[in-house]
Structure formats: C-alpha cells, structure tokens
Image (cartoon, rainbow, N blue to C red; front, side, top):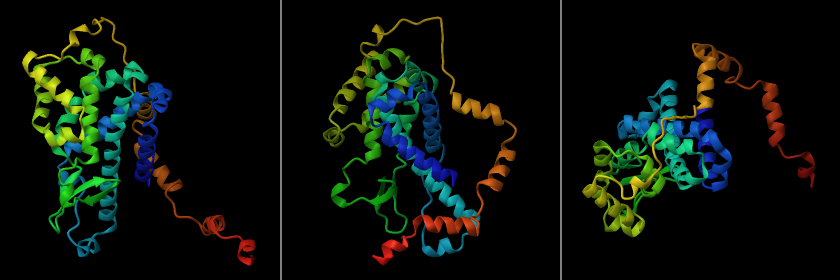
Amino acid sequence: IPVYHEATVANLLEICLFHRTSCEEAGDALVDLVDYCVRKLRHLLAWPNDELVRQIASAKECTEWDSVRILDEQFSEVEFQVCMCTISIVRFLTDHRVAMPLAVTTRLLETHDVLLLLVPLMEKAPWVRKNRINGRIEKFEEHKWQAVEADDEGRLPKLHSQLWLTIYNLVMDQECRARYDMTSFRRENLLRLRRYINEVVVDQLPPLTNLHRTLEELSISGQFTGAAGGSAPTPFVVELVAEAREGLVRTYEGRWQEVADEQLRTVFVKETPEELKRLGQLISIPKEALNE
C-alpha cells in the first residue's frame, strides 16, 4: 500500500512540475525532491534490466507463486513505474531551473553530478525490452509496456526523449556550464553521447544539433565554450540540507521496527463489518434515485 501511495504522489509531482509556477512555489523543498530522484536513478543503474521488472513466461508460472512472491513482484513493478516518473520530474526541474533556488542547481551538478547518472542510464535504456514469449520489442510508455510496431521502430521512446532533453538543458545552460568543473572523467562521460546523435535522432529532436556541436567543441578544447566567464569561486560554501529526509531519519533512527509494528497494527488492517457497511453506503445509489 505505501508503494502505491508513493507511485500516486510521484505521478502528481510529474504533472504539477510540468508548470513553471509549481517549481517556483516549491522553493527549497525541491532539494529533498532532487535527492529522492537521484536515489531512484541510482536504483535503475544498480540492477540489470531483466531484474528491474521480471517478465512472466506463462500464466502457469504465476499460479506457483506464494503470497510473498506476489507482493515482491508487485513491489518491483510499482517501483519501476516510480523510477520512470522521476526521469520526467528531473527533466521538468532542468526546464525551469532559473525559476528555482540556486541550491537545486548545486544539488544536481555538484552534490550528485547527475550527468554521470544520465549518460549511463541512456546507454542502459531500461524502458526498452524484448518480450520473452513472442520476441517483439516493447517500450514502457503511458505507465505500461507496449509493443513497438514495425513502422515505429525508429521512433524514440518518450522516456528516451526526456533524458535527451534533460542532458540538453544542463549542458547548454550557461550557468550550468560555469558551475560544472570539467574533469577528464566528466568530459569522457559526456563525449560518449556523440555516438547516439544521428540523423534519425536529430529529426525527432532538432535541438540536439546544438548539443552535438557543443560536444565536438568539448572534444577539441577540453572545456565548455564560454564556461570561463562564469561566477568566480568563493571560499564560502553554503549547502541546504534535505530537511524532510534528515528530519525523519533523526526522529526515527533506531525505531524503524517499532514504526513498522505500529503501522501494521493500526493502518494495514482489514476493515471491520461496520466499516465495510459504511463504505458501501458511500458508494451506493440512493433509494430515491431508484424509485425515480
């Protein structure tokens, strides 16, 4: 149940953060959100694609599962959907970066170095798989796996496009360039993108033409063009703490089993006959309507 609630909230955030005003009003709370998204992206990279969401070979296989296995499979499926939502959330955060606190940019580029996650994630592409039964290619779109038709094989999956646009936003933004200390490792990581920018991709995402030119310049000069004109370094370092998570960890450290037992006793319980009757009355049709 908590994971389903998490998926619902992640989907709501994906919808709300599409709008610039939502990002502006969220303020420093976005620092917690960035940390959360990074944890989900790391989860996608840490596990092989076939273990993120396990495919079912036949209906007979499901009948052999016990209750614990069923819950594990449901958890993996919902967790994967949440991770897919975070890709869009990160993209929207980079879209509206200028409207958000500077701490969010610092968190993305310096604390977590999200570009070191996005490039390997694009290469891994967990949103595409081969069906074990019929051998067809499937892509994860609209929160479900869909078979790719023969005439759509060249079309980029939506999540793939989201990732490209996220990288574009970070690499092409002048302030991000100035704040991103280009080391040899970071440079090689970004230059790996060049092999994936071709005519088919550019036709669908024209802005990537500028990204490809920037990467070619990076391969020659070793630095972003115009990065030297950024803000001068300062001896003072101010970093916001992820208050929500830090507060929870500090409050319940060493008491997690106690919290789980309390939730099991008071929240995750079956409804009593009286509660079921009351719920039935909420969704039942009034007698007056039936008489009419």
